[in-house]
Image 1 (tube, rainbow, N blue to C red):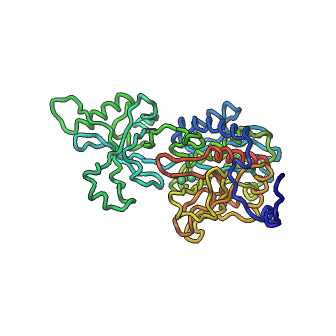
Image 2 (spheres, protein in one colour; image 1 turned 180 degrees about the vertical axis):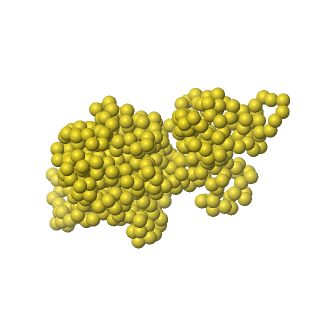
Image 3 (cartoon, protein in one colour; image 1 turned 30 degrees about the vertical axis):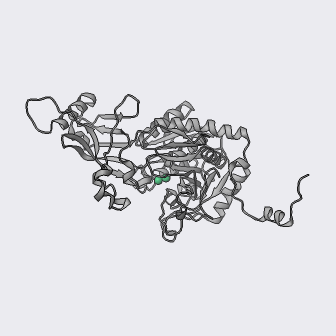
Length: 467
Ligand code: MN
Ligand code: MN
């Protein structure tokens, strides 16, 4: 016979907020769905490692699903599917709603750039009879983590005649990789006295790219010349073309399941492809919505969202204004009535480093999508801090859709902090709150997420679009 509940147990059930592991709420069937969803995500992670590659990948997927390039001034009807490609580095997918944007749009915004190492404008040099690239890191990284791991080179170069060359070297098994060398421990006495953040310095992030000299009777820097000769043969480029290039080094590490139970995924750049993927998948999977729905997948978040492909630029605002004009209303009215999930990651509680978290207010692996009411630092500086009303609305949508979610704060007060695109969207008078996936080892070359949390974030986006 089941033991009768005490009065305290009954009251606690009614009144207390419970932090629940997903397995309490999920059937085996749902767990299988989450695992299957993540196989698609793993393919995306493997094939689209930079913002440009994400845009290409998402356009190909969208076109397969009936999306066409957005044409300003065209009259669209409910259910029409369009995409807006902003310079090949950020993209908006939209499905027109029955009410258009007359009562606002439903936006999910995330970013497709990740921390990495960019080549400097004059990167190539020879030293110690070896050839190297100089780099400037992009986004917040712990520099020492980027040494002694295989790296791949991705990007574009614009030649003197204006033609563009795409570069991708180091992803395929038979392709060469690149590496930043580190000091051996035997000679690391002085380095060992540096602080952790100073252990490897910015100007020490030099990429080893070759060591064989060009065969010649005489000459200097023949290793560098040999590399230039090979690049000229393969891409038709000369050294000056590095000036007009965007070349990025990313970890050449395979995407893998993590753990005996395969419950997690290890990969480079979960932040924030782990939210971009659920966001655009939810748009692809949505029926004809009431309100026009947008997945805004942006560049430049990791360096502060500035630049015309970042969300501190006006490209999303202009797009919504174009939709508003089509619907016969002012752009500002469409924006003011719009609602947005800023889909970005949060720092997952790590029991090895518990001291940086407030255990009552951090997010936990496998507890579902995490709502983050505010980010920022030093007394909520640099955040939009969502309103109680809007958080209440999102909470109702998620509960009605049976989505697993949790609330979380990014670390202890004054421990550090961070920002997302939320505040730039809020500045357009849009209601916005952060929601996304808890990440372990965030911004490391190899980050970890839970499959269940990825799927919950997809479910959250899907239910939000439906609302
Ligand atoms: Mn992020
Ligand atoms: Mn980030």
